[in-house]
Length: 331
Picture (cartoon, rainbow, N blue to C red):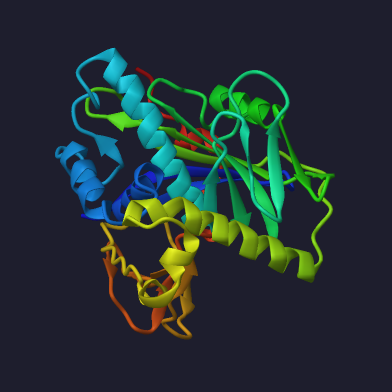
């Protein structure tokens, strides 16, 4: 199936701490992996096949990897970090609506006519700068993956998240010479495998920042600038030189349509349902993705034209009453 489930925690900039379940689509992961490696979508199917072959066949409900993810410790660490980056990007895109991801590389990035991210201290820096369409702001993003973490649902959050938060302090972001404070999201994944007890856990954590919002005119200028920088970054994956080659002429009419099929619904969680108004396409990062319309039956998901299944919002009705009920088993 194209969906697997994970226990999911969100700690937002207002200090709200929510924990529940979330469906993770292998299509989301494959698209994120394709953009990260090729900076384009032609390899989505290849990544999807790779993920599918590495998933557990003994447990088809949770996001659990076959065996112990890899035979050697070196490969396990490599897969954990690499797949953690892909899942992090998928979560930031699908749960928070971030788009137009630009890698910061080793020393930051300069977006022509817009933001400039500079390294100011030694050590690892965040992975990306992206655009938050809902709040019309820039966001710095950092990915973390762990096979051994046992503190993902602890009161203070996992150690890897705090390590990620420190990386935000090693860069500064400027717009027209003015220091700004972008949003700062850490996306972390605690993996589960056939050989390790426990459940997969994903965490989205946003340290508070003192932000001065852009005006509507400023936001539009920055959105267009980071959009063009994103197009520049994916153009080589299509054998093109830059954004103009990609979005001009025939390229402007190209789109990628991604379908995902739901998996089995959680038997012990009541999900909210709302009336579906219309089946409208989503435009994220310049590519076309059809919104999947889902609805929850008593113990399964099915296609239904009159209902829209809400995966991305953790409402009161689908939250666990306390964090202890989600703690991974010992061992």
